[in-house]
Length: 289
Image (cartoon, rainbow, N blue to C red; front, side, top):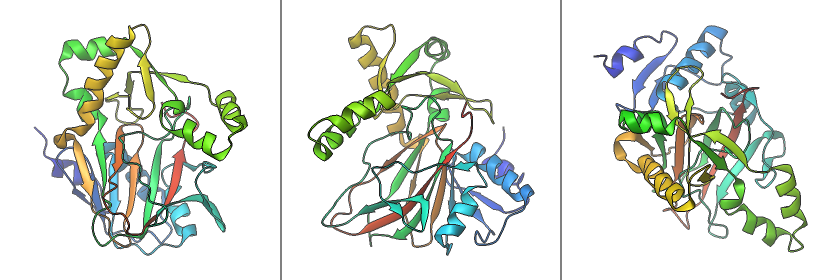
């Protein structure tokens, strides 16, 4: 039986400290301000697939340096229009909460699974951190799938789920923004519901992933609504199992990079009215799965 540190020893370009036995790693001995050679970038991509979320402490990055480093993992996507963007570095979204505008994504989700080709991952860099609170949690949906009985795994692999942004609160947001409903109609036309297998295979590790989340997965095709709701409730609950989670306490200079293919995350909204501000970059590839 392998030990987590056996996996860490496979990396030679930086130090790896497993964060929990299941998910996450602290990466040491890298100054992210400096250009990285392709061998280091390749090891970082392998570490991301292996550990699912990577944490880098004590980094002093300019926005340009965050963008350059994030490109180690894939392409840098255009930002979503409803988040403000950094004027001089439009690849970066500003995720901010203040006393006047308290907000946090206090729900379990994978980003943008309502697209046919969801993001590979995300880079999130601390700018302003509350004195206490404001943690972020990640859950391994690889571990969640592996925890299920073999018969249920086999059954789930036959199913397809529908994902849509309309169940996530965006409908209400767009109506508040434009009471005429024109923006809502345009969004519906541009981003119709999509279908994904309930179980996906990670393109790097080859491991199977439970690919549903409560924020964007509306129902399972071919099941009665009551049966679909009951099954999804069980599957959604797996992200809440502590043994499958990593919980990060942010510090100034902390950067997190996570694999959006195999994880869900949850921003804890317990810090209001304190100020919290992070810079977020979405990572894409031509074909996620």
